[in-house]
Length: 626
Image 1 (cartoon, rainbow, N blue to C red):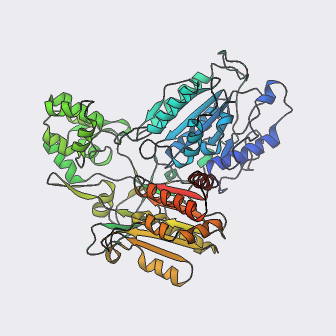
Image 2 (image 1 turned 90 degrees about the vertical axis):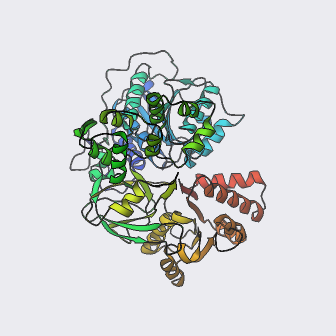
Image 3 (image 1 turned 120 degrees about the vertical axis):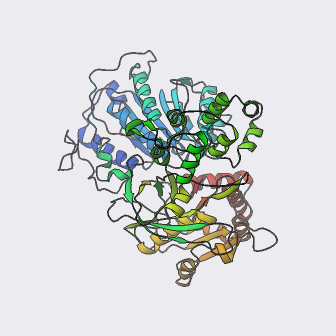
């Protein structure tokens, strides 16, 4: 508990609530303060339990949590890898709770941790999201490569658990977490729990997993040599220098996804012009009364409402009375129409819903599609289909309550922020491509993009929150060059980066590589970018408009074309950023980057790979991909 004097209840100095630190960094600094001001001379097991030293990871990425008692405490390492911040947030939350429970916790980014050090641990928890086709996130790739190496150490003394994050609507659900769990077992590590698979609605599962882990760990002694279960010491009564509530005491409740704040649109403008095959818009939200703070590189979370027309069509198809009451968790009993508008995903076809429709309809065609031997056929059949399409094809009878019980909770959508608080302190901007398409002769559309485009007005209260992205920031050194690759809406964060550097007077050179379909209709923020060029602030602007010539040209082609100069920028310490599509563009850009380094740096393929790895570890190579 904090006091007005900036000290914890135990008298240990703590950072003021307004200190501009990310939570892991705050943990680290306050841990040092706790160690400096509260540590008594230790002996025996107490010396082993010290938490305020760092080994391996850098101070900015390893967060030893503050000690609060001189009693020996069980050491637990938590390693996380996160692409959008969900896994990182869960790891931080788990660290807080285990610290409260009296464990000696070390919180570390996977890429900043040595696999050789892992072999020295008795207890490690892994919290990881999945990127792409079962791949690790950027900040876990290097660690996993080392773990997969032939010379990786054996881990017979390690007890571990994996908390995996994913989205079951996509192939290889929680793929990286599963792969990590398998590899740890291959190296001899022993599971504390089976790998937990978290879907998009994960908070309850995370809480339950953390509680289970805490209970399991309580069965082991804190002695580093003992593997015999024993009851945890009853003398452990930790007093955190930073409590879970204090961490966000200076922020409004809207800082968190589950407690968004209402905001209103200041404007929405078309970025794509007549003749474009896309519908891209620029949105600005008013933060004057919201009190939400953000940094360039963060994402904006938007809680949408479902389309009223789709809700009516769904209820009509199922023959359900729109006013029928349903029970919805904390909402209690509300009309089914309200439930479908604001609380459930009604567009996506989830595996559970598909199996429910199969069992209820007893349709042989659907049974065949769901046969485990036909995953490719099922995937092809589902392409473009929404839930309403499936329900219209396979007739089922169900009540309003049965319907909502089969649906998943509505989730927020995340958009890279395309502005800087230094340039627009009371506004936050996003760049969104509106999803509209035709499936089987029917018009279909995305949930949030069309909510913003079609339904939201300047009078609409839109729940928003900030999703921190501490690993995607402009260079900390204002003199460092910056290369940004952002095709399509991937330009969003780089508009924010440029605004940030200009407002702060950064002298480093800036190079943007932007791509879209057609220059005439798809050159987003053209006037703004060209003005920055004229001012001499945007030193290079290269474009790749794929449909403006017979042979398609993409951003990776521009990278190769200007490889010599790009290598020269890298040699001067340039940071390299990528934002946009993960499946194709990001992979093609990285391949081009490696080729440039190999060709113009005179390196072998292995040396180029190592160079890129070092860029990533030193935070000179960062991606915001989806």
